[in-house]
Amino acid sequence: MGPLNLDLLRQVIDPRICSFTLTPIKTGAAPSIVYRVALFGNEGHPPLPSLILKVIAPRWPNDPWGEVREFSFYREILPLLSLRSPQVHYLGHDERSGARMILMEDLSTHFRFFPPDHAWSRQEMQCLLRSYALLHIDGRAALPIQEQRAWLAPRHERRWTPEGVLPMAEELSARGIWSPIPKLGLLLERTAAEGARWSDWPVTLLHCDGYSPNFAMPQDLEQEGILIDWEMMSWGHAELDLAYLFMQPFCSAREIDRAEALEYYWARRRMRDGTAPRRNERMALQAYADALLAISQIPVAYRVACSPFPSGSEQGQYWEAMFKVLNLRLQEMSETTFR
Image 1 (cartoon, rainbow, N blue to C red):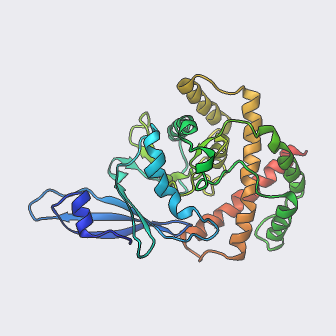
Image 2 (cartoon, rainbow, N blue to C red):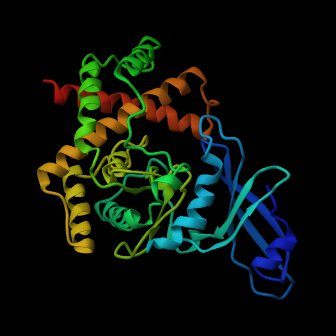
Image 3 (spheres, helix red, strand yellow):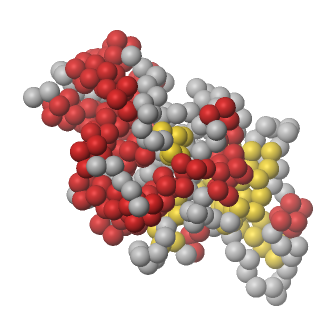
């Protein structure tokens, strides 16, 4: 649990704290655990508000910067954004274990947190899109200079080749995890060739994990919600964040009109910074981002298939759903693009 102790809590929260308890509430796919911290004061004092503690383990597999990403976001990036956010009480590093710790406000008393399979309503989706629009506007200026972005892996840069990815997809089909995708090779070739068209398009900060548990929904949906869980954050085209909203494993956008939602997002962008790309450009870049995001997940799906998460674990449930969604999305894009 890193450096969390009673002395620290008394120092940064309240000197009246006599004891505390930890209750695990979430285990990330990467080595991180989120706890709710219940605080207890002296008898006769009013109850103390609970806190949220995120403990981030060192040495992440397949991600050398994973252990510092969210920590660095709260320390370096968040102060540059106008996004509403939880109050961060402490950012710490335990030199003995190497674990990093983020101690912050517990939003659950004033915001709603929905389960992964919650279906967003139109108003809930608009609330989420407003937060993304604000992130993507502010994120352009908040993005560190190129030489200081090593901890932010770019999502818009292609790190796969058609000849490298296609055998992985075929193996997933051979194992019975996926249905075959006959025209996937064509989609791979087209997406690889189209990248140069968008190489000079504006980039921004990305959240990269837009599903229900990672958004604190306000009671009044006209108010601003709060994006949480920044351990997957990155940078690239804003359309990649929008693509994930409609490709996340538990299909929270299943009752949402995608075209209407994207128009709403860009309307908010225009209201905020006065400009937006032409509609045909937006549609073309969104189609490219949809394909790029889906294809970039094929190597991850293949790796998970080779080394599955424990059955019944949060990660296992995530990928059980993600396999199906990703397979269907790739089939749809392959068929609609190459009829």
